[in-house]
Amino acid sequence: MKNIIKHIKYVLIPILIAGVLLLFLTGISNIKNGNSLEDKKKLEETVRRAAVSCYSIEGSYPPSLEYLLENYNIRYNEKKYTIKYEITASNLMPDITVLEQKTK
Image (cartoon, one colour):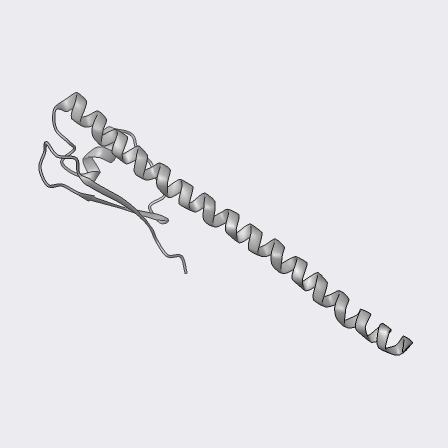
């Protein structure tokens, strides 16, 4: 009976340690994903605000993303995010979408 209890301890303790470690790593991963989503959302809001500022100052929305980035001082990590900026007319808000690039 004592032998069985010793064997159970040797098996159960490593399993518990592995479980706690797995929960810890999963928590860290969830935090990173949450931050990434928040950063993406903030970048999209920043680009939208800059486009609206341009419209209020110049009377039309920016003709291109490059114009907006250069003239309204927007900086972002181009390796991490792609900004899709689609214009329909100079007096209509452009369609702005921020996409996160897949890292290898």
